[in-house]
Image 1 (tube, rainbow, N blue to C red):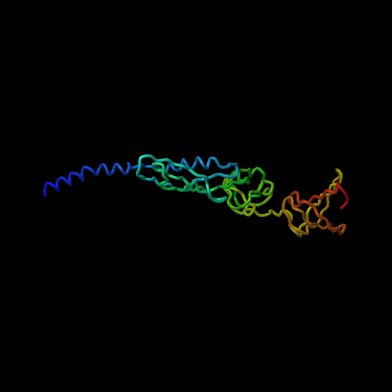
Image 2 (cartoon, rainbow, N blue to C red):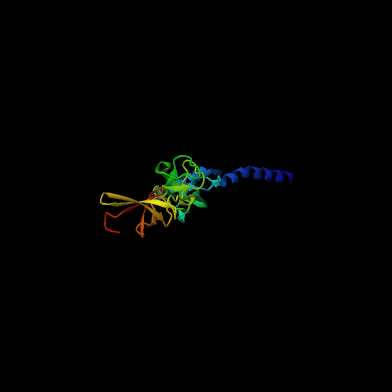
Length: 236
């Protein structure tokens, strides 16, 4: 009886390694390998200057059992703002699992940014601004022309986008103030002191009143206390 049990125990110990080998060896697939497979699919998507795909997933290493492993990245799926790349992991020719690699779709816009640090109260000039490609944050980009002549409300660091909301109109013509009206007509220039009825910044249209003629006119603000009216194209 004792010999029979001993023989059985020896048989079990002898067969155990063979059973483990029958299940296949341990395979390791790194998260980096999976990410690289997904990146090849992302590279195949349409790319332009206004969009960029940024990986946001942390891919853990995968531990599997078998003899052969293969990765098959599939077509990305998702929305305009986020996509997933499914990466199928096959072991010995059969699907073992699918890992999803996520990407955030970053959009960009061309917008005006500061060329240097700008202090509050600065009236912007073209030298203060330049155009740059910046991440889209929900606000549309704006050009330099839309900002020139406006006053900055707060500090702006070099390279930081300057939004319309961060500025205010620099009203260099005030309602009720005496301003100079410059009338141009086919090369002839006439000036007169008039009263501004509305306020405005550089490039704005304002209403003025000439007390000498009792006539109301409108013109374009061209400088502090200066409004111009060009009637070369016809009588006003």
